[in-house]
Image (cartoon, rainbow, N blue to C red):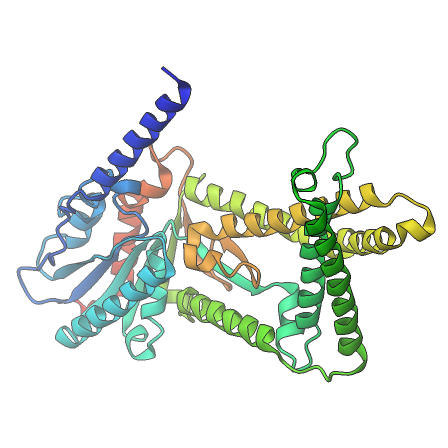
Length: 427
């Protein structure tokens, strides 16, 4: 049997399995675990991304079970604690998290109004923090939360890339012309070379050069001259004639940038009192390790950007000039032009692919804005915090996904919540 048939069969089987698993019914119980007596404490649980694992391999969220260690311990004797199990799609998109945050905000508001005398706490796992952060943007809700527990949460840190503030914040913006002229020149000269030359190799001719008729090649050459002339005139107008005014490109870039900032502002940690926060982290958290790898890739993309702007692009411009003048100067600039063109395209694509790929764990939507933003993951938000670092080897299996089942974590959370409750407020 041909290999390609086997490959198609395997791909088809995987696709069918993904569809079947993705359609599995969620059997998690999201009903409140109500106390037998007066509600004096409300604990809201918020899960993270893919709580039933990718492709919904599990039929329920394990730590939401009534008999799960965390739920069982927090519920205690069942007299005064209400456990509210918040459910959302768990999709790895910004829109899903913002939609979940809106629902969570409404549910928290309802709980606060229904139980005004009770202490309200949040226990959050992983990327559920993004949902909570967005919901707590409302100060009227945030100030009534007595304590927040973060379990294996990656805290997102976002900053502007170096070129953004200097270019998009000013009315006079030469970047728009640089993008137009440099981009058009790069694309056109690449196409022109493919059509009219042998790619600089002695033994391999361009497929286009072999197949296009002579008259079409002549048309391309004429158009090439006109394009270069227009680009030179545009460069002259940019430098000597036009005042720098925001163009469509600048306005569009600013709109995308503002959209990126609004996304980030919605999911970054708001101002929270240190005394009301407990951060629990396992040693060798596999999710954090993976995010660190993505962080390194993003940083490497930044080095590629720096190399492109400082070395590769000037080399490319030099090769274009030499290529246009090679007949008069009596030199062969073809190979220099070919290699500089290829390297700059590879650098541009590699940089953006690395940045986009490194942002995928935070959502596909956010990864689209990596030209504007540098994204990193930290163990805690800026400031001074109480962090409970688990001992090595204290848990088995996937550490990130089992933090909430560790006996020491469960006891730590129970004791921490109890310490926040003054004796006079307990029923």
